[in-house]
Image (cartoon, rainbow, N blue to C red):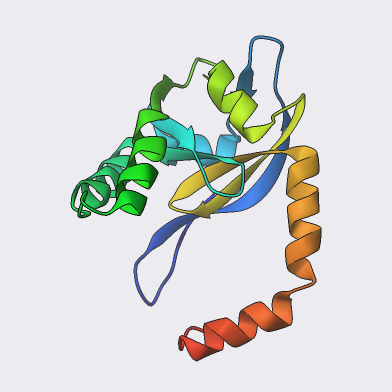
Length: 155
């Protein structure tokens, strides 16, 4: 779902939803996300072995930021290549499903059951078991994470 933060006016996607990947490699985008995602989106390799799905406007902002990185630095080139070359435009069909290309399905290790998580201005698609393993690992570190955010003045 999209929520509007009253103080900053920032709109973001939040929540997690379990779905099935059908035999044609399609997954239904949760109804609460469809309006904000629009009829077209961009899907690419994400971090932590998940996929990122961006609304077109947000994708354009991310791509613009990547294009401004100094390409003389190997890490910048490598990340931009992996992220941009792996990206593909997708259209939501009449049932709100998107097709996940084989190479992205393999990258994220997606099986039949997936989780779609709203994370700020993008969606993440995880294999259900990988998501549960990730959450279990991170939930054990909440105190350390909160401390680090506190050092940054965020929490």
